[in-house]
Image (cartoon, rainbow, N blue to C red; front, side):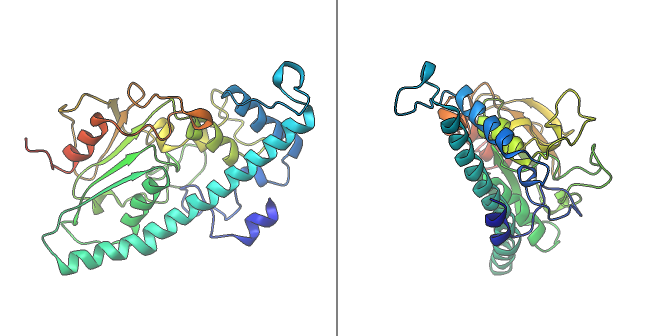
Amino acid sequence: MREFSAATQTGFNDGEADAPDAGPGMLAPDQDPEKLFTTFADELSSAGVRFDDTDGGAAGLGDIAGRLWRGAKEALRQLSYWKMKNRAGVVGRRGLGPVIDQLHADFPDLRIHLVGHSFGARVVSYAIAGISDVQPSPVKAVTLLQGAYSRFTFTERLPFRKGAGELTGLLNRIDGPLTVCFSSHDRALGTFYPLASAAAGEDAAAVEDPLFRWRAMGSHGAYQSQTQALGDAGASYPFEPGQILNLDSSGVVAKDEGPSGAHSDIFHEELTWVAAAAGRLNPA
């Protein structure tokens, strides 16, 4: 997996400015592969995945080698997700950002509203870093649904080391709110995402939550930002230009869809209303 990571390197950090390109923590030299694969297998089992071997296996769990193999495949899958996540940032900054600039140049009165799910949330967020700093910004709202990137990306002072989030200071490039919809039922981001991120033995200070440093936007919301529950369609929200509003969507985004949990459970009128209201697209 380390060879695969090196061969597909696009530059790594998880939303921390000036972070070294070290790769995901699961590839750290001090990681015990057997322990890592077993951890992934255990989480898959907790999510309802069965590991039956060809002989049925005791209690339907299969043999140890089978569990390790399943865990290893899940670790590789998570590594491929990390690669896509990093590329999403590159696409946003170097691809979508310049496209927005060109649209603004061609159609100065055009109001642009960005909505992204999962890696798409990273694309639209990093597009903000790729647009020109013009005021007022043509981007009138950014809405994130189960965002698959670090909840510390916009943080001015990181709580676990000196430094800031990679997109700190760029919220003024949005002439409207940045809304983060998150759910505690998103197992892809609440469980597997931080496990892939974490390096063995790090962050001993985070006693209450050993995976604190690697929590995602889509599972916990943006760090130290205003938070309230997702309301019904038609609800009023305290949107402010250049400000983050977290909306806890756990009461709606809750459908358990296999190992990923509710990660893709985003087709709800309540969420549609949020995107419309944030961009002032609703008739009211």
